[in-house]
Image 1 (tube, rainbow, N blue to C red):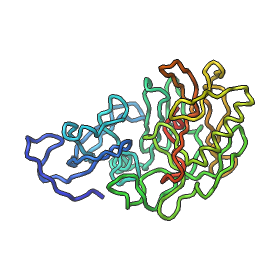
Image 2 (cartoon, helix red, strand yellow):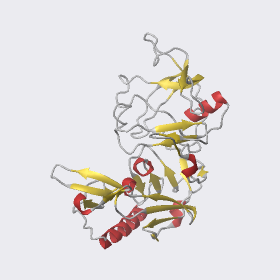
Image 3 (cartoon, rainbow, N blue to C red):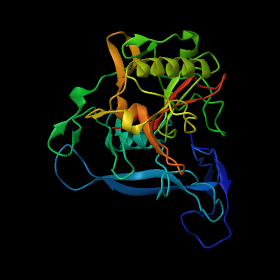
Image 4 (tube, rainbow, N blue to C red):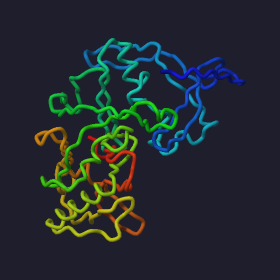
Length: 318
């Protein structure tokens, strides 16, 4: 639902300034900084993967445009070079929903986050596959595992629409394993309650996974115990915001990144799990006092966060 708040602008017309337009409140998902913008309808085109040819046209795309001169903090802490955001959450006017309507296609999207800021990411809209990935004719849809998405009843993370059903993507998690061994968990924290608290969600706006304190401590302890068996010694003090770090020269590398214990997020059954290798569980850190280490890329979210586990971009990257 688009908010029907009418705004007026008393400057020369431009994308962020129009009379009698519906106003919108864009929000930076990292800083929660709000702005005010007019809603705009325009056309654009996207390349198609089904067959070679010209980009597929999209008409009547609804979006908003904010003037950074009026809201200078609206782009703070976004990726370098960012000029805006594409909404991918569960909204009626998110980009996947609008493309689905325009092409009369399924409201499906797949996203591949790059493991480095130097590499481009990829996103496919409105198709369950095939997903071709370079280099070479690699088709990825058959390699994927699937788990149902869960809707939180209320509790959107946005300031304006907090009382609506959450637009976030939650998944069901039953346990966590380190090197094949389950860690102790209070499993009530893994389920969303009637007011949208707790549970497990995926968020590309968080660089690293954020865990409720007891879950984080159980994971950190189990990981450090397994690392001790490999004769790895902790860096003291650790490099913030992390709590578990090791010297780079102590950890061997392989095609899965640093050779450390795997972390499995067990989904709806023991046979279905999201395995995280060292390339996604560890973060390389270098400090001014010449510390060079690999740190476990999970952070402590406190005793009572709104969401018990937020799976961040590092763990979801390619």
